[in-house]
Length: 613
Image: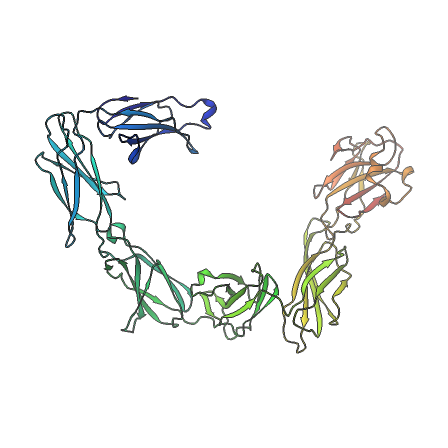
């Protein structure tokens, strides 16, 4: 490093080794700290960005004369700056005036903010003092105003300053060599009242009678201090007696407004000195012709983490497209802080993922094409089941059966238990077409002393929605405990037999291969199996893949000719072409040998086959 003059130092470096670069170097950062006589950092650190990754030298400017600095360099990649180099110290050239002594005081608050800056001649001028430079500006902004003053002036009044902000004042002298060291002083101007209202005032309806009003603080240069809060004035447009409330937030929720009314809102900001001007009037019209509030809303825990909410049908309103259920542990007016669940046209909803044993507040509103309807009355419910069966579970699930177990409700003595189960199944049939199979709901009624039941005649690989309800003596509604049970996969239904269409070249046989329906579970893969007639001495079900794979290629015996993944098996296949399919060789056929062919569809359960002799 080389000191070029009293305010500039040339800094040079070498890039990190290739092993330590950790990416393409995009530039460098130079960090400069001023040191006092004791070698301790003073003032704010300076940073210089070098945008050229190939640079190895840079002139650091704007330093103080006759001042010692600590300088470190860091390389920058796309990920950010790396480790800084070791610190190197250097002193700038002298020969310029030393720092003057500066004193600052506030001399006027109204009508304009003014401060007086006074300084004394530097102790060392190193020649004839030819003038002073005064620079000042807000510490939260980068702009600085600059004044050049004659050598006989040692005081300046700065006017029209902003209120409630911190200013940085710098004063330096100059001689024939250049500008000297700057004296730095900070001053915080007294606060005033805001000179502008809050900006960007908007609103949003949370319900027909609840509105949230938002705004931004006044622009920083117009706040005149720290904004401590806001006053909000609101009233009906035909009412001459407005209300005013105070908040420290930049939003507020107004609940329990009247329907089909026009309201006026405006807001102003406060500092410690008082209030600023009002914003423009914000007009808000609450809607009319909205869906009425659902009535007779009830809720009951179905487990320690779930609650069912139900309500009566909303009549005499045809535009309802669904419902909105709101719930929270802390009932506040701001509906944005509530959890919400949207449900279609129904009269019940299940809330899940709740805190066990916690109390929840619940409200329900209908949804129409124009927005949310009126909110129902607030009800409370605890996530602790008392009138429903608990610990509902399924065991011994097979392809066609499941056994349900449960425990009696903790408080309710049921008249009986009602069990319902149904399903909606989708699967690909043997033609590769997607089929839908609705399974109608079945119902069982059991005595109150029963706590388990086995359900038979189910369909394999089907997800059943099972409800178990404890019915009270008076027959009133109680929500069911719910569980989804998927039966085990089974072998597919028997396929149609493969067929042949002749020999294309006298050495091969073209066969038409069938596919299996996935009604009982997804197919993993298919085997095409060939058995010479003299070895066809048992049912195809009893040929294992191990047995079929043990026939040597040169021997006559049963073998696997091909393996095809799910839904990739061809419709037509040339048997005997000598090519490998799925790891198995489609062996050449022998003359004057009769063959039996069958396709085996494989799932995760015992397999079904079909034959062609």
